[in-house]
Amino acid sequence: MNQPINGYIPKGDSKADWNNASAEYSEEDEKLTILGHPVMERWETPYMKELAAIATSNRGRVLEVGFGMGISASFVQSFPILEHTIIEANEGVFQRLLEFQKTATQKVTPLLGMWEEVVPTLPDGSFDGILYDTYPIAEEDLHTHQFRFLKHAYRLLKPDGIITYCNLTSWGNLKSQYPDDRKLFEQTQIPYLQKAQFSRFDMKIVRVDPPSDCQYYKFKTILAPIIQK
Ligand SMILES: C[S@@+](CC[C@H](N)C(=O)[O-])C[C@H]1O[C@@H](n2cnc3c(N)ncnc32)[C@H](O)[C@@H]1O
Image 1 (tube, rainbow, N blue to C red):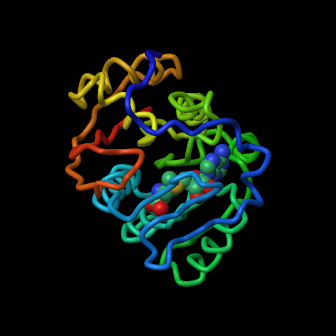
Image 2: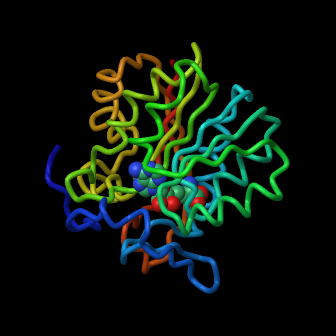
């Protein structure tokens, strides 16, 4: 992958500390910061709405990876699904997920841990849809953590199952080189999707309005992948 220009780079490797690190939700609930990393921000709401619509388009059982501020999870809940399984690695975020579970209208199954540990315990063909939105906890994972997951996603999905995902920290860097979202998708994502056995891909472009102080994304559109098994 080519060197990023002008974007946010998550320095070092925080994997060993992530689970127990304090989850700092801003007082106005506009941002989530963990170990100083800008993990999630409220301006992503319209984008999260679109990802949730894609991941639930087959209804049924939906897997979400990364709870964050629960924005996409709330949208997932607005669809008539059967079960909403959510994997979250950070203890503090997981506590919020347990609160979310109490008021959710559809069945929520919270699973604590890094997806790398939890996913091998989940059976083949168990989900109709997946929404993957975690964070590059290690600098070496900046552009690639989603591709490691996609290999497992193929196994977890039922036939015709749908997955969507994002890595805004990566794409916020790559956009300088690929201002066109479609080219970014075709040239930096599809080759890895093919390696993960997927062959049916599409994408939508979602309009967003990040504030000027957002460190990881400074553009007015984001691609939303639509990948079918
Ligand atoms: C960008 S936030 C998710 C935002 C969420 N979609 C929302 O709408 O609020 C990423 C979340 O993934 C979690 N996470 C990061 N790496 C993870 C991993 N390897 N396994 C499970 N969760 C992880 C973080 O702790 C964080 O809560």
